[in-house]
Image 1 (cartoon, rainbow, N blue to C red):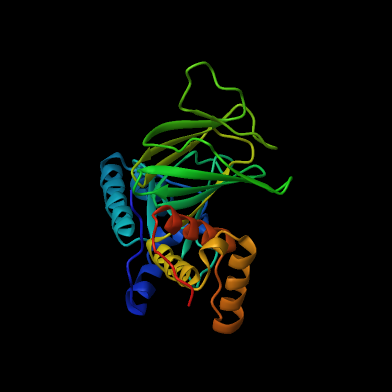
Image 2 (image 1 turned 45 degrees about the vertical axis):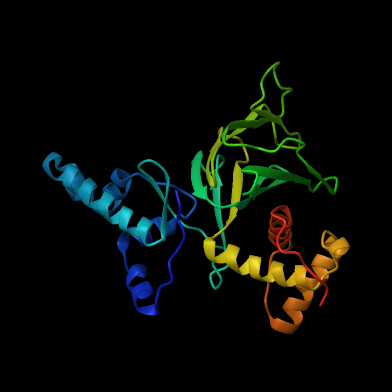
Amino acid sequence: MAHTAGTQTSRPAASEQKDPVLKFLEADPHRAYTAEEVARSLTPQAVKDPQKKSQAVEEMTTGLRKLVEAGRVVETSPGLFKTRLFFDKEEKNIEHAFIGGMGNTLYRFRSPIFRLNIGVLSLFFVRDTQAAVWMVTVRDTTIGRDFSLTRRLRDGVHIFGSRPPEPGEEHYLRIEGKYITKKHMTITIAGDEVSLEDHTTLHGTRIDLLTSEGLARYQQVAMDFLHHTDPQSQKDVVKRGRFLIDKLLHHHQNFETTFFGAVVDSLLLEGLPKPTRA
């Protein structure tokens, strides 16, 4: 489901910060809760009374869904709620979530570009909207190597793991790396809506995704890069890095290199724009 935050003024933001439900969720931003669990913590006396319990849970569910609509909370799976997590409090362009090792095994979101950190591997997913497929690039930090999966992912259910695939097991994608053993993750894709299940692995999985605001901001700077770079140099990681350093030094704009590269790749996948050197 989508969970992009709308533009808010300082007055509503200050009001939402006082919401006891939001404060409770933000106390442990890595964990997801049911409405009953929140009600049990915030209204312990009410949930002890059988006649008041259902009303308390219903009111808590209503409050949680309002926070979802306001873009402050995510419903990670039906009936399970979690606060949105941003490491950069000033610029909420990239949202983060931990599943598996943190106890929560399910997460769902909507984004055309995201990253999974599994053990020592980082998997970057970029959606080719024209072909309706996903390109996946894998980065292994222990060997300093990047490679792309030869098969593009289409809508459906896919399983990532380290064992060899069984005959005819087309939905299975083999990945290898430290801390990755047997079946690790199931990913369900429907358009740009993604559902993930980590099979309770020891170290879990971190999900990083661009918000709608973040995607627009990264696309703008990526277009600027493409328009000022020769076509034969647009995939050069050194050129991309120098461009971002210039943005930081001269314009005080900070962008994450890996996400910037993924957005540039996504624009090139779509064949847009047809850049010319300035």
